[in-house]
Image (cartoon, rainbow, N blue to C red):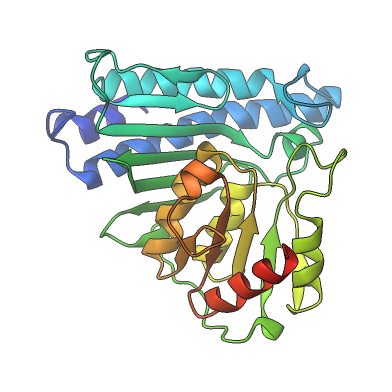
Length: 288
């Protein structure tokens, strides 16, 4: 596995590597992290559980496999691209190995296990997510679902693929015919975060779903299986990769006001583009 990563990165110096070289390396790293998560699935099947800790609340777990997968990903990124900054869900910011004082033009947002609750219950909807910002712009996105063995990959200007096959957003034009997907924040036991918005779409769309992985939600929009996605209180590591995938598949990604603050505000809407205005209207009414 490391040989193929090395080959992808060795074609150029890390700061001058082409975006497709970086994408190739990220795909291989995601597969390596996915193998670690499959070990966790086997442990769950054997023991019906893994060692759990909790972060922000009693419904926000982290397993030993989150930590192991992130350690592997960060180690590989630091080895291959030492000038790149890495921000991981579990470990926070990992400074660039060679440049600790100047802001990095290349910044990775890593979620080693998006869908931890699903994973801890042995439910196969979870993934590895790697998103790269170049000068603040989402530019490379890789999301790997290791049990299903789905690899979503995109680079800015180079399109989006699923298992190497190009993907495209749906052509649904009416919200009343749309299948939408969303998620709820970890404080949903104590407040009504996203409940008004969910009810607004439940009454206007054909159907709404919640599957428990923001990264995969966006992949399914990119692949045309879902027509739109929205969520608030989301973190950059959850959506950095998905933004690239949806946009490269022909879709639209904004905040609830139609702006570009998603990574800073934690508020995001992704759609096939045709439904975007209709979704923003529903969100506006739901919050009024």
